[in-house]
Amino acid sequence: MLRGNSIKVKIDRDLHDRLRKVADVAGYATAEEFITHVLEKEMLHFEDAGSDDDIRDRLKGLGYIS
Amino acid sequence: MLESLRRRLFGSRQGEPIVIVSGLPRSGTSMMMKMLEAGGVPILSDGVRSADVDNPKGYFELERIKDLEKETDKSYLREGRGKAVKAISFLIKDLPDDNDYRVIFMRRDLDEVLASQDKMIARLDQGDTSAEQEAMKEAYRNDIVRTRLLCKKRANFELIEVHYRVAIEDPAATARAVNAFLGGGFDEAAMREAVDASLYRNRSRAGGA
Image 1 (cartoon, rainbow over the protein chains, first blue to last red):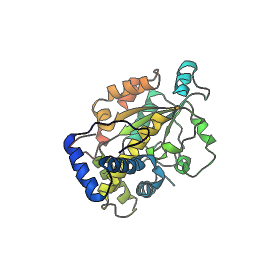
Image 2: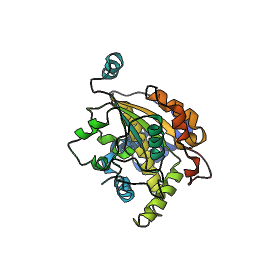
Image 3: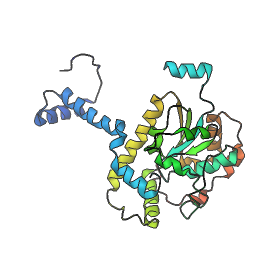
């Protein structure tokens, strides 16, 4: 159950069924809680550039950063 | 939002924008610098990294920008106002907010980018890079999305995306789009002529962007 300031997002019903099953097995209280967790984790890839050591090492090797 | 509106109505108080030619390494940034130079856009470059087999027409780089992540005094970039400067997408986040930027973001098929980078790394003798290709692709995808998000969020940034393959196949349309993005007045014919399709050496079979 989502509380507070939330909005509705439409997703495919079959995908939602799969998410609900995985959320249940993984111990999440609801599918919404699982989806929120997955999305927050995925967002970190885009918002936290500082942690990207793979790119940094490669760019150093190519001579594009010091 | 308000800052963006203010800039549109009253212009910027930060002088002419710096034209940033960006993208992943080996995505066509040097080709775009060559186009801009031919079209009459002044270039800010120190010429330290000279032309080689990977970039026969030159790199158009500024050595100091490679330290952008670490340096605190970035005031030297003001010299780039009204000029074009090359900065890979990873460094866009480190550009200071006391300038306005017009970012020309070069895009290229990631398999082609990685293949070209691997050859360059091999020539530079920087070790084996054959492993972790999928991880690098994922990291680069994230880098691209981050750059787009950042340019949308910061009011002093404007962005145009140019696909390398499209620039090679239709340099006239690319020159037209870039000229319009920069406010017009540059030599589109010279920009078009600067595109050398023979340098498109690492082509993926899929041909996607």
